[in-house]
Length: 181
Image 1: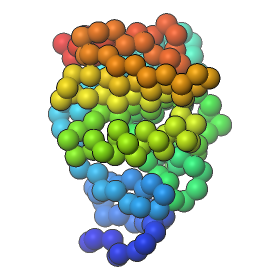
Image 2 (image 1 turned 90 degrees about the vertical axis):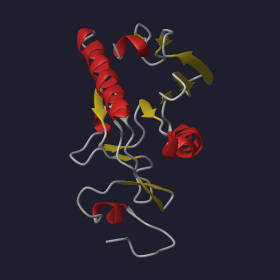
Image 3 (image 1 turned 135 degrees about the vertical axis):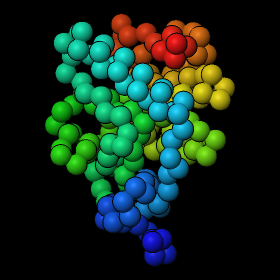
């Protein structure tokens, strides 16, 4: 059943979607989500596991959550996203429903249908919300676009075969090609 046409939606509308339908909500506008493909899921799995294992080895307190995981970005009822991977270091943001506020690190696996959303809409929304680091992993072009929003803003690009450096974890280096072997 389609949602009734409104000028502005809330998280109540997200929670009233039919079973199996997923959407995100940005500034009261709803964006339906297509099911992910196999490569998308493999990347989410391998990256999540690698990051989680690193945090455990370092006895860190950050937590890793793959989608679907609710992030109430601005702690309001007009913004709800499900990043492919969310890393949260401030456990006070975590509730049974998800994360209230900005995760420290978000990774999105871009697909042809999500390019505009990931490269433009979410980039600016995540930056404004206080995300410290945002990666766009682009399997079609074998590239990682890494945005660092902490003290000094920075942007780096890495090919899948290169070593990508993680800003929030100084000792963590990732090579996407190695994860896909």
